[in-house]
Image (tube, rainbow, N blue to C red; front, side):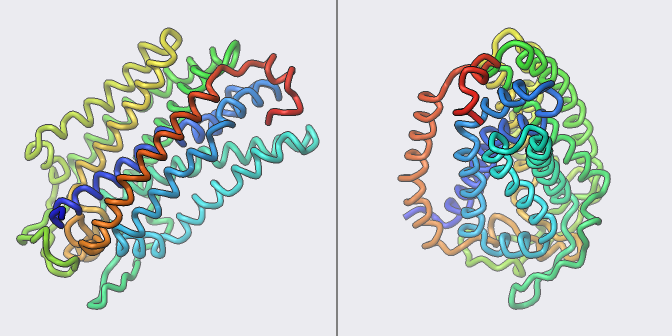
Length: 377
């Protein structure tokens, strides 16, 4: 039987993998939709962009659904606190994601003059979740204003608009720019002619934005207060967030893990190297450009996770009730069963996803749209 402490860390890693998988795969869907009004100058070009992601966009959402389910099962108190406390933010994301399938499915069926509303819906569905996810991560570094009572019932004291503070908005820009970069790199890989050329230019410009905003966010993180556990925690004890003491450290705490675990320095390095690779490779090596963009996303998200570890959901109003990897997880048995099931189904999902990409690969051109005007989106 796997040690409880090991299982807790393993599920922190697995949920991180699911979030990274969502960012890389569904990220190019969201990014392509966000770039739709700018890269598609006429209806056929916009259809090229839409059909470049059409075979995979709904399947890629599985990463997001699976991540939500994994958080519910592995970190139930995190799920309850975050999803109920930040109801309006979650509804905003869900609304944006719900209008996406409607726009995809009905765009080719409505009158030509009505397609602008489908295009607007796709733009919203691509940009709003990308921005909100970044804002959410930005607020993690500052702590959410929630408390827990003796029965572990959470109470949120903040408001939706309080989440839109300067640092969180900067993180939102980092998230939005890296998702748009991913979309541009995908379109540079899967389209031809004018759309491809515009996508290459957009990828380079967005990579520059990613580098600048990621660097500024890193500098800012080094100078904001962080959270530190000062009591001894037993990684094998039953989960109870109330059994620890957490203090707020004025600055530098969020960088402590990089000196404690030097291997984590690889994460921000990958974030920068991947974006630089996009600048250098865009227009020359489309496949390597997309891989470089994916590496950048991997590095940036891992940087956030490594900086926050072991905190999952810090509390700004009562730091000692902050939720961590060691005290916000499900039981040993639950994590053990989930690990067994995941060992079977995750490789299966990866296998059929890879097969789908293999069978549906190829570039999309305006000629393809014109020749198949009634069978494509």
